[in-house]
Image (tube, rainbow, N blue to C red; front, side):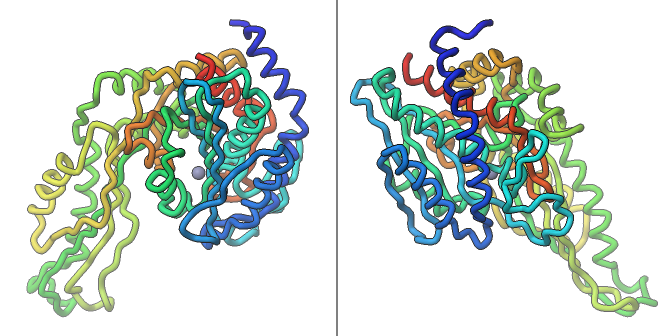
Amino acid sequence: MKPSPMQQRLLDRVEEDREEIIAFLRGFLQVPSPNPPGDTRQATRYITEYLDSKNIDYKVVGPDPEKPNIVSTLDTEKPGRHLILNGHIDVFPVGNPDGWSHKPWGGELVDGKIYGRGACDMKTGTTASIYTYAVFNELVDEIKGKLTLTAVSDEETGGRLGAGWLVENMPETMGDCVINGEPSSPYTIRFGEKGILWLHVTVRSKGGHGAYPHLSPNPIKIAAKLITELETLNETPVDYPPNLLKAINEGRVEAEKALGTGGADVMSRLSVNIGSITGGVKINVIPRECSFEVDLRLPPGLSREQVLPRVEAILDKYPGASYEEIRYDGPLWSPPDYEMIETMRANSRLLGIDPKPIISLGGSDLKFWRSHKIPSYYYGPMNHGMGTVDEYVEIEELMHIVKVHLLSAYQYLTQ
Ligand SMILES: [Zn+2]
């Protein structure tokens, strides 16, 4: 497929702005916004100065002044749909900077790559949203409906003070569709995310002297066997909605590329992680207690109600074992066959890549919109060093993401 004249015009526009886009991202990376602690005032100011330079009005809002959110709506006053652009401003902390070969807050450009904490998660995606919004302010006569930019804080610690607050308090942030540029890799578009079920398991016994193992079971030994058996939860059958199953099966190759080898399998089933374990007081004592934390991730089609009876059936086999639920957020997804997916795929195909819709393993701010049944999708760069050292984005990937966001928003607001 060749781009239409309209698409070509937008693609040319992005190329004309190449240096501006690169400079914006590099500057954005040079303003630290690690979360925790999550103070994003300086990075927020960086964005508002850019919007000021384009004469774009905005509001800075939120319940915590140190964690501001930017909201701006472009209302064409012509009937049409309302598209939301969303990206987060905060990033993971750096921790020990040893091991970085480029400064974590340097925004350095080396060999076609831009380095810095947040380069992929997600200042590239947020740059795509902000740039797209700025261009539409010039193209307002060509589009209809409304476009709202939401650049938010607090995503890395759950989003309650950011996207969650906007969705609850600002009706203008609720639209017909949301797009976001979290790292997905150019090969996949994320239409859903796995759910989280966290359990705290405790094994108790009488305890005693280590030389008298015949007098009391050992809770650590029981926990070890129990942990091994919990792994069988991986095989819990999943009753996928049919359109989801189709997307999951069709996206397996791309999921492997984007999530790493084995990712397609983990995406489509329950997964078990044991995150911590405590027990025992001394080498020659049979402990009275051992406890551990279990992080279960549930694919769409599976809920707590289906998983907990299986957990209980396993625990029942082990004397002294009990559990407590710490957290539950069910899996959330938007239709994998909604038009925005097709639009993004078609626009990316113009640039040589056909991304497939898949599910994310981790969570994102889109959960807030998805829980209100607003179709929400993310499409962003490849994960290079996310959460670890030498995080970077390739410039050509940055340009690819910006182009797909701009073209897709244009199409959504002109049809
Ligand atoms: Zn993120």
